[in-house]
Each structure stands twice: as structure tokens, then as C-alpha cells.
Amino acid sequence: MNPVFALMRRKETVDCTVEINNTFEALGAHLRFDNGVVVHPGDEVQVHGAPVSIPYGSSQNFRRKATITRAGALERAWTRATGDLDMMELCEFSFTERALS
Image (cartoon, rainbow, N blue to C red; front, side, top):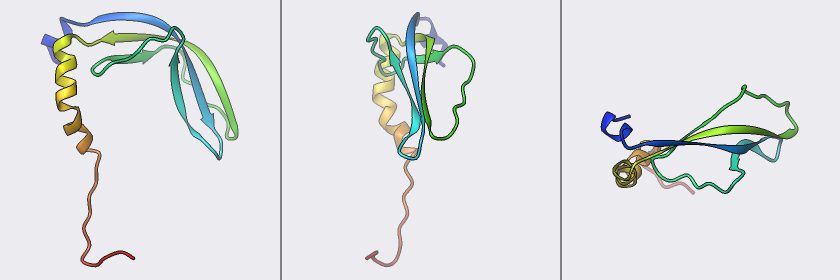
């Protein structure tokens, strides 16, 4: 994190629910803020509490606290401006000599 951006940040702690799915149909984790808080570009979220592991075939919800570190206006604008470039790093392209049928 850039030290200039760090000067313009503020933190808030909120209640949240972590929903974890480990089934054949779904594998994933979702975080829902209980009071409808919205996270914007440049914000950082840290969920507090012990790590969890659930057995295959189950879904569980966990109540936790989360700290949201809000980005300042300059950092938010920078994240919006450069976010597409960072996304391109995740793309992988390949070319073949023949057409796929």
C-alpha cells in the first residue's frame, strides 16, 4: 500500500455472516454484511475469527466481525483507473494454427 494513500484511510468494524458451501453443486464462500454495508473499489476487508473447515457435502454459516478499511478518494480513483489492467494479468491467451471444430 502506498504511504500517501494510507493517510486518507479510515476503518469500521461490522458484523457479517460467512456462508461456506462444500457440495457437489457448489464450492465457495460468500461474505454478507449484516447491516447492508457496501464495499467500494480500493476498500480492504479483513474477517476476524478462527479459520474454518467444513466436511464435503455440507454448507454452513458462521457469524464473524469484519474490519473494512476504506480507501480515500484518490486511492478509489486510482483503483478504478487501473483495475482493468490488473484484471488482464489473470487472462491467458493461446493461438493455434488450426481452427477448432
